[in-house]
Image (cartoon, rainbow, N blue to C red; front, side, top):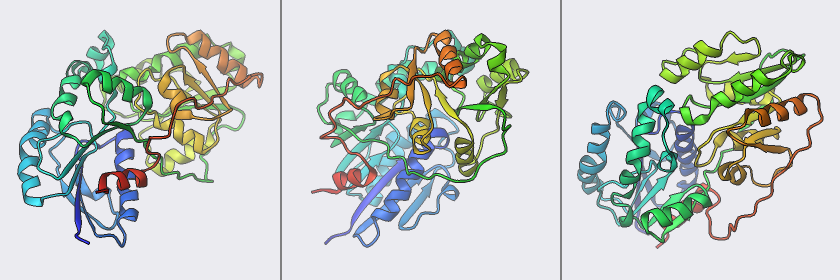
Length: 366
């Protein structure tokens, strides 16, 4: 059997959920490629962050320095590189369909702002979100029809892509969460009930609704609760600084530095309930992570959250523009009077890919 060469491109996946996707993908690919006639080449921002066997790494340290350089790599340099490597499969894990020469080309799309209408707050604190909301539709469609298949994370996005780009080869490939849990915990106040919102500070993550909900709580509830926010403290991000300066003086709010993976898992294990109010996600990885720890959840009443949580009893949903709804759910949770709505999967899943191994089989099949 002739050896097949696969190129996996993830040069822009350096933080938050998108880095987790790349890391999980390469971890599984290292296992999958064992004892197979497969050569795997991963294009990454920093190869020191990966130590998985059976994978050759090519580093692009400057990829995040400017969008002009990123586009140069995607539409000019990668074509030259692909001719040198001569891959059987080229899979772009980060939205853009590059100019490359390969027997089969695939793209994995997970940037949500193509569906987002930017606000003044977005332009004020993170102008890139505003730019992306305007331009990503056009970046997505460049070369998209040249792919053998276009992978998306959820069914609602598949329907949007089919309509938006007039393509029929969109396949749902769930971002398999490599389930790693821990029995270890962090030292938190034992007489408090702890809520967790783990998210990188982006304006569409809807932090304000949780802060507003906290302000609506009765003092007796505030005194019994702590709300934990990761990646806010000591973060140079403009929006993170704004949140820290505005809300850090509240006793029931605890901001954390960016935690490494092991510390974050300990925090999941130490807290009592996940709150996830984001207005826009292509998956919502914290939902999968909290589910692995069997934690109760209060989630945005949006399609992505219901699809991500799947079949689950200990979950209720709230309007992303109604802090009073969230405050009511928090109060009931603290008083142990909450009656969960629960969630059941109502989506046809016959043709979707449910883990990375299924995706690998798909891209390598003749």
